[in-house]
Length: 89
Image 1 (cartoon, rainbow, N blue to C red):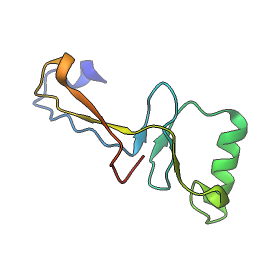
Image 2 (image 1 turned 120 degrees about the horizontal axis):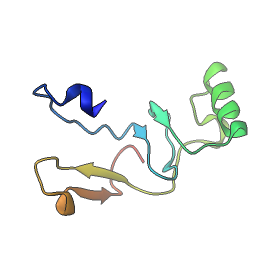
Image 3 (image 1 turned 135 degrees about the vertical axis):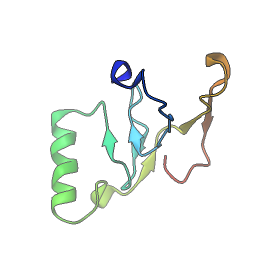
Image 4 (image 1 turned 45 degrees about the vertical axis):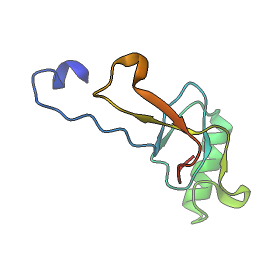
């Protein structure tokens, strides 16, 4: 994807609704993508959405770790700050 956008004047935007860390940050009904789930967990999430119970279902939303907020204008060593006060875990 980066190679495709290299020639464009693209603006990077981080959206915390993409749960794409090395381990899941928890469950939030506003997530668009969630990674590092087992096949059984994915099936459960799908059934929750299909039944209209939201992605998290009866268990409800929960946070295992905070979201990162990125500053793409900063050097890589200073770009990222983990915030636990985000509305989205």
